Structure formats: C-alpha cells, structure tokens
Amino acid sequence: MSDSRTLLIRYDEIGLKGRNRKYFENCLLNNIKRALSGLDGLRFRVPRGRIMIDMASPLADECSRRLGFVPGIASFSVGYPVNPDFEEMAALGIELIEPHLKSGLELKFCVRTQRTDKTFHKTSTEINFEVGSRIMSAFSEKGLVVNIKQAEIAIEIEVGRGEIILFDHRIPGIRGLPVGCSGNVLSLLSGGIDSPVSSYFMMRRGCRVHFIFFDNQPFLGRGGLDKVLRLAKILNRYQTWGRVYVVPFQDIQVAIRDHCSPENRVVLYRRLMYRISQRVAEKIKCQGLVTGESLGQVASQTLENLAAVSCVVPMSVFRPLIGMDKQEIIAQSRKIQTYETSIEPSPDCCSVFMPSRPATKSRKDRLERDEAKFPWQELMQEAMDKTEVIDLDSQEGI
Image (cartoon, rainbow, N blue to C red):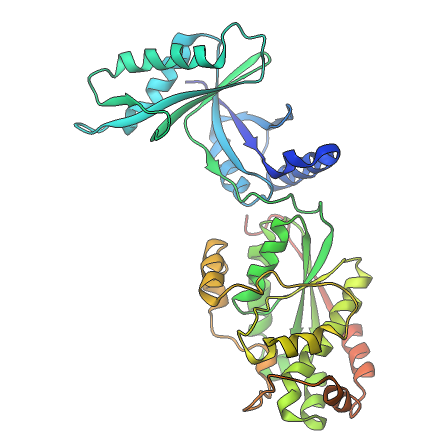
C-alpha cells in the first residue's frame, strides 16, 4: 500500500449553480485551505466536480477531522493512488476488505467505478467486473457476496486523466453552501441552547456569522461572557474566522426597570437589543440579524411580541429555528457540540429584573409610551461607544 493518500472531496448543491458555479467552487476551496492551514505538504487540485488533495499518509486522519467542520462538502474519501493494473487494484481491495470479514458471517460488497477519463481502455462496468471478480476469487469460501444495492462495503474507483484512485468508504460532510458565499450576518448570541444552533444553520447556508452579546457583569458577573466566548469558539470551527461584539447592557436594563411597566421589560430589552444590533451590523456591513427565537417557546416569542420587536429595525431578521420544537433544537445542539456548554448554569441578561408575569401580547403604543419615559437613544449610544470587539482565533478549537 502506498505511503501517499489523496483526499477526494465531493459537493452537491454547488454543482447546481450554473454560471455562478465557479464562484462557489472557489469559495469552498478557499475555506478548505483555511481549515487545513498549518499542515505541510498538501497539494490541491480541482478537476471538474471534485476537489482533490494529495498528502502523505500520516496527515490523512487530521485532514479528515478538520474537513468535518467545513460547510459545502457533501462527502469525502481518503483514497489510495494505484496504477492502471487490475491485479494491483484487486490486491488493494482485498487488503481493505479483509478486516471486515468475520468467520461464519456473510459480507455484502460491490465495486463502483467513476470514469471521468473516457479515453481509458475499459468502461466503468468492465472495470467493476475485472476488479470484483478478482476480489471474489480471493474470498470465495469466506462469506463474501456481491450485492450492489445493499453493499456493506464498497470498493470505489475514480479513473481520472493520468491517475486512478481507490477508496473503501465515504465520510459524510455537513453539506450546505460554503461560508462567505452568501454574505455576512450578525447573530444575537446568548448562553442558551437556541442561538448557537441558529448561528450554525446560517453558516450552512453560506453566511459568515459574527456575534453580538449583551453583557451585564455588574449583576451577573463575568461567567455569562466567558460562556458565550466558549460557544462562539466552538461555532467558529465551522467558518474559521469571526468576531464577537460585547455590549454593556446594564444601564439600559436599570433604566427600563426604574421607569417602565414590569410586564413590558423583556420585550423592551429585546427592542433595544435589536436597535443596537442593527447599528453594529450596518457598521460592519452585515446584511441581516440572526436570532434563536422559536415561535411560542417563551413569553417573548409569541407572534405579537416578535412583531413588537421586529418593527424597530428595517433590517432583515432571520429566525432559522422558528418552527422547531425544543427537542429538535437540543438534538441539533448535541450534533454541533454546543449542548454541554449551553446547559452550564449561567443567567443571561434577559433574566435580570424578570417580572413575575411578562406580557405575551405586547402593544406597540404601550411600549412606545414606556420608552418615552427614559433617554434610550443616549443610553444606546453610550453602550455602543463602550462595545468591546473580540477576534476569534481561526485555528482555536479545530
């Protein structure tokens, strides 16, 4: 078996982009290179419909691990370069299959060939037969059977111009679109379960996601900020670069507590958060805001309250979780590895001065009357002037 390996990366949705296909391919290739930065001796190639990376064998596992965090990849395989010799192909196939055979048990297998070089002297069907028959001869009495539709192990062969690559399994990617191809958005990130999942969904649709966190250290301590930064670093593995904007929110919350109706507090908090987020988003050229809101999940997320909050900003507000229930969101948070951090006990700023009975059907006129009771524009500007910007390390946590 050769000491060199070739990673073969496949994509699906990008292939449907018509005249814009090259733009998306380049975006994905650049993201892959960033994800694999720091690894020496990689050679990138882009035959039509594929991205291929040549490397030394010891790098294959680390490259595979990192590629699992790159949106836009449908699947990838670690392949073995072979000569155009059926005996050599079959010998490698036998070596890959043998560890999967168990005494007395049947193992279904097949050979599948993708022939992009049509000048090769055998068709895909002929290659399948030549290699498959040789493998079957080696295991004729050991329980190996051909089953194309239900194969438990498939030996796949890529025949390209001047090269042949053989591999034995596909590793699923996270699909979607490459980060950066759809523009930038700003996510309202809390320490809870929902907002990290909504941020991840936007990354999968090609957005670079920056984060904004509303901090209240005088009442809550630094624990909330530390937790959010850890969540942001976990999420940043899917895009390799982003920023966190930390907004001091305590003066606004105290003013709302002291001057406004208790039942309106949470919605008033959210209205000010949206206004500040829009200002920051416009400044850093983001095209929309992202929240983890799910319809009806808490009092502030009824249709009436969502409308009362959204109306204060003209910018698009994306809510990827709006129709999901809590168990679906939890399952996704486990998948992206944010769940364990999200459930660590830590109050968020919306829980400060929480009323016993928050309004579920806020009225715009009453909210505006409450806002007229304190200088929210001045407080908002002061908070923005004191906002801290934190760059996320592109390689931290990978």
